[in-house]
Length: 375
Image 1: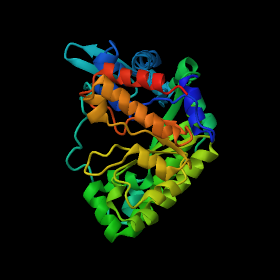
Image 2: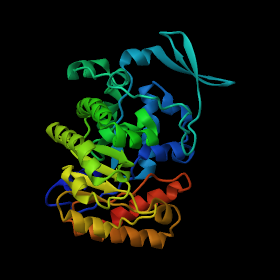
Image 3: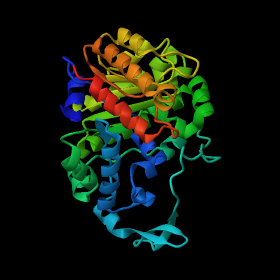
Image 4: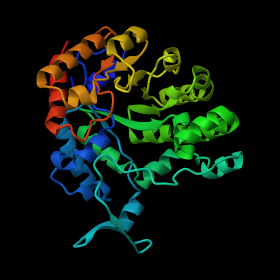
């Protein structure tokens, strides 16, 4: 079976005979391990040239060995004609012929950058929310295709789409409000201004539904729904401010012919039924390393075949720091648990691969999973 075959089968009611293996947030892994995954310059990641984008992706796909890939959108053809990369003695610049501007690019920072001070505004009225979060335009699939924004996705699908499963990412509506208010503001608003939280969620959901149409136009087969920090609100608030929007998003993904993977980052205690009531085709959870436990066997026992389950192999204790024997044993344990979910299971790590994890260890993880995952 190809990787695509395995993941498609994992979503089917009868399950998959061969367990697929993936890593979550692969873009983070590629950023932090660029020099180990490809010999190409870092600025290929910022290049408007489709050939450059394909070249570095070929390398990382080949050297990682997982069964899916994130399907990218690219700038329009006109925009790509306006942009070029200029490598100078004092740095790398992106030139914009339309404006005459030369923007100096910086190499990606391992571990990512910090959120700048003042990134979160004081948004305290419905009018301010509307001004910050404009309504999306109607999606025109023909205009989107004609613009060339799917050119990179189409080229990747032509090369690896028959072997690997294409996905995209979308944030849940409530989690998106973090970008509006920050953590403290988001929590305060849920407690004191539920009307504004509802308005912001409606606006963010509208954009998520727009992005579902983009994902379908790109050729994605599934959408990863990201959610963080909502374990810190009450079950009642979760049901009021989160669940209705999750359901609408999941329904839209299904109506567009794609699968949904709901990644709930945090402690699911007290919210298990809410998580499953969202109706996603698959549920993914992080590993328990923040003072709470999420054991894959308990996850499978709670799900009971109602949806596909993604594994939550420990990204630090096992993938980064474990021996080959420890990695093999945990992969086998996770797969055995997944078999008890009717083989509706995709082996994954519970959180992004760390900068300190060697690329050889990630490849070993994928190779062992493919070896042990055969029925």
